[in-house]
Amino acid sequence: MCVIIRLFLEDSTKMMDYKYIEQLLESYFEAKTSLEEEQILRAFFAQQEIPAHLQEYVEFFREQSFGKNEESLGKDFDARIMKMVGQQTSEKADSRKFSFKPLWRAAACVAVVLALGQAAQMPYTDKEQEQQEQMARTLEMLQKVQQDQNTVAQSDSIVNQTKTVN
Image 1: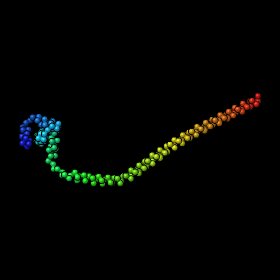
Image 2: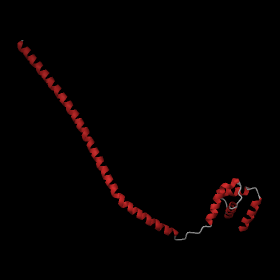
Image 3: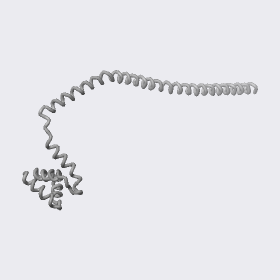
Image 4: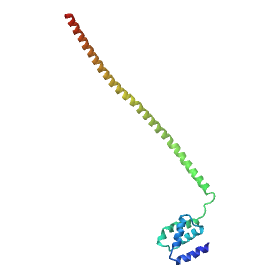
């Protein structure tokens, strides 16, 4: 495999036609390349002289080849991180739970009391106004009835007087 890569690097510096690399790139982004072809791409983009139309892929393949050489984190890495994260989140959760919970309860109680007070006050205000208006209308009607009764009584007395005179 190393021989293929070395031969390719020697030939690629001499040839100006990069169609093979472009074909490999197309295959790579369609997920159709073999591991050897991917190594050829990484080796090609590790060179100093890359044509301008292929410069956009340099960072991508150099980062991939750099990532391959990194050391592993160890088998217990996940357990250690989860332990650290679990401790930090539990400390933060405890401090928030005790400091904000009573404040939220008090705010909720105040909001409920204000809402109930407003709701209870509105019907009485409207009912009082309606009752006052109804009382005024009733008084007006009573006054008209009394006036009508007085008028009827006067008419009756006039009629009785005229009967007695005749």
